[in-house]
Length: 228
Image 1: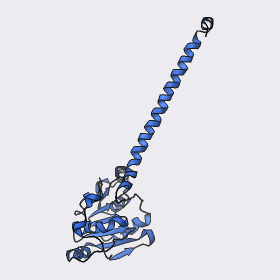
Image 2 (image 1 turned 90 degrees about the vertical axis):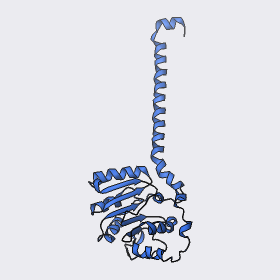
Image 3 (image 1 turned 180 degrees about the vertical axis):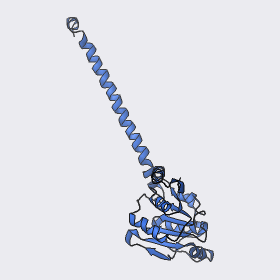
Image 4 (image 1 turned 120 degrees about the horizontal axis):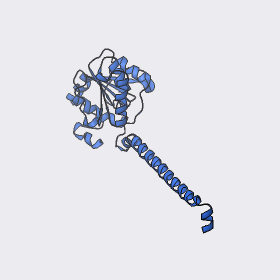
């Protein structure tokens, strides 16, 4: 640009520089927004993806309304403490609390635990519910007289031994979607994916005490921490 052109239109150069600075700021803002979004997406997604990398994956599959109803139906004559192993979004725990149980949930995914606590507060049962971020193999279920589990076949055999050794003799265990491999249920409720199996601790603890044979594992071979 010649000196004459600069003299005639002195603001043109400054205007060009201003446009460049504006584009630069806009680029930085866009970069920051995109970067922040990716970080937030990773923070949200990581707890959901990480359990899939574990040796035994307990995926989050929300309980159906029929499953919740079936669980409450088989426990209608029961009271006291209840624990949902792998509590997900807390719907079993919250429903149990509404029916008079002091209910707890153990869940490895922190986002689901926080959401469950919010739902319990929203539904007015936060005083009778508790949610813990915990690996089920490192937790003790001895304080609970009612246990609900939405498990997967790969874990049920080892969970049999853990619950047999920890639960009080008065406990009841309700398995959803998949039954325990060697325990004999005292009753079932529902059909298809909504089936629940009910087990009496007096029966399965007696079998363990008398050393009845198991198909695959012995108690000495179980190393729960290796699954975490």
